[in-house]
Length: 435
Image (cartoon, rainbow, N blue to C red; front, side):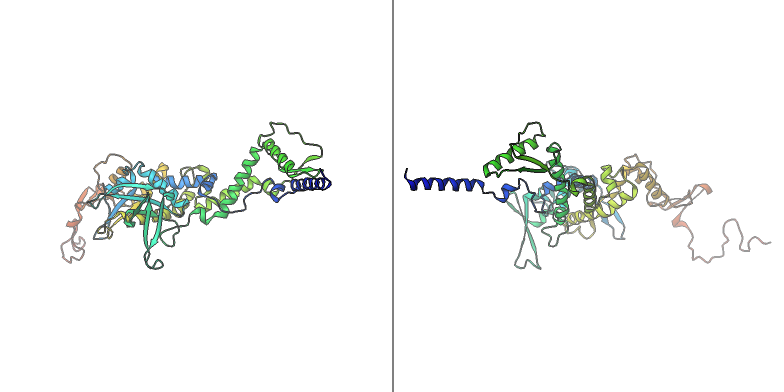
């Protein structure tokens, strides 16, 4: 080997050594959290308070039966009993899912997906009648705006399962929509708050997975090359994730420096409570209901707030979508679907019967109607209480019964109040009985 060859070999060795000692930013920091604030639906559902809120809301909507009502010519409203569409919404849909399962899934999509919830109306080919109701996952259905003028005159087209679906066949429930095609889910509107809660959960999981080891730094008095740095990092990661069950021998000059506790680490419990409170506010679910896990164990004020600000707005969106797509054109003027919110009181027997007592005393509902609602056999009493404790009216034939006076009259036979005849009332004379 000549002199110049020796110089070239030494130069190549120095370059290789320099390359081995070059460290990038990734080499110096073993772990950095993703600075992005966006969380996915699955990540959001992994947060306990989010999954609890979604479960409570969707479970409530699944338990509420849908009724069909009709407005009479005189303005009164009656329930249409036995309609097949209500039977499908509340029971057998014709699909693999039951009615409550379908309402649960649609409500979850409504809250957590920008695409909203979808129900496909499978129609008979030659009949204007729904054959089956089929739930479609939000991530399996797409909706686009068609038409020459997509700003003012918008038309929707749906795509699912490789086929194009006409808008009249799709019940589409959206949250905070601006165009009727896409909505704004809880995940989208509250990305930053959910990200804080999610990364707090990850931080706690990391602490538990590391066996309680505090974060810190490995400090070396000697300069380490890239290969040595990578080997040390990998060995330390295996040691920490194993919970300290393995032994790790540090080389001469390498020591561990524990990092000082941050305010987040010292107040992790308070941070979790704050995150849970923020999430309950996002879903409009009072904290008492989250702690109880249902509406039954919460205070009356919490249940009323939950019904008014959380459930009723969702019901309104759901009902509007059902009225638009599941009613015939000749029914839309006087028919409408409505969720029966009285089911919310069935978890509290005392409160429910107090409501029945008020309804009976005020003459709002007859006894047999209340008994039917409680799945009790009717007693054949069609009277409505008019007050005075013992005055009863039969609306069917107009009979008025006053048991404590021993009288029964018909309101249609009562004399006209404008009658000016001189016939004295029963039991008295015109002159008050004077001789």
